Structures are given as C-alpha cells and as structure tokens.
Length: 112
Image (cartoon, rainbow, N blue to C red; front, side, top):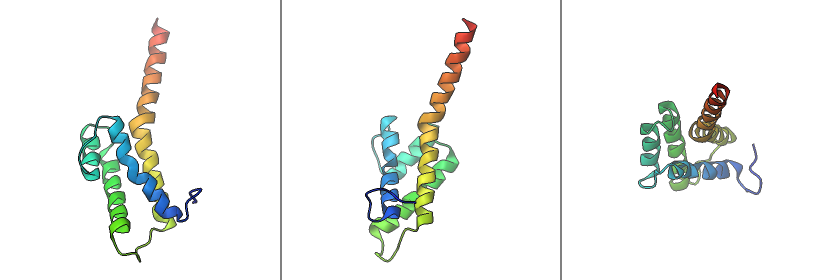
C-alpha cells in the first residue's frame, strides 16, 4: 500500500497515524502525552477499549521506529494495520456519531 509523495510508505503511514491525537484535540483533549490522550478518548467513550488497545500497540510501533534502532523497519503489513486502525478511530469519533444523528433527525422529521 503506497502513500503518494512519500519515499517510505510504511513510515509515512505511521507518521500520518501518529497524528491521531488530532482527533482528541478536536474533542477537547488537548494536554498530555499521546498515551494519555488515547486513554482519555477511551475514558470519554470516544473510542472503544479495544480500539484504545490497538492505538497503544501502534504507538509502541511508532516509538520503536522513531527512537529505536535504525534497523527496525516498519513492514507494509504494519503500515496497513496503522491505516486500518485510523479508519476505525475516524469511524468511532466522527462517522458513527454523525450517522446516528442523521437517523435520529430523520426519525424525528417523520413524527412531525
């Protein structure tokens, strides 16, 4: 899976996913480490516990590539997992609530 304009697709995929704290920021979670932000998103019910656990695994992967041995490489499979996780986070934080709101509005409109 390629990331356009990036010389190392797996590293770029992780770099984009490491900004997952941005979803929390938009929901008012603006302080603390990425670890704390993931935990707070789960605590507030923005993401399920299992998604938080996945996010922490991805965070560990990112830490090892950012601060570890240069020989540690991120595989295409790792990058795919990172992108799949981001899709889940986006769904839980933004898309699913918006779908629920649309359904509720449509139901309310039918009653009136």
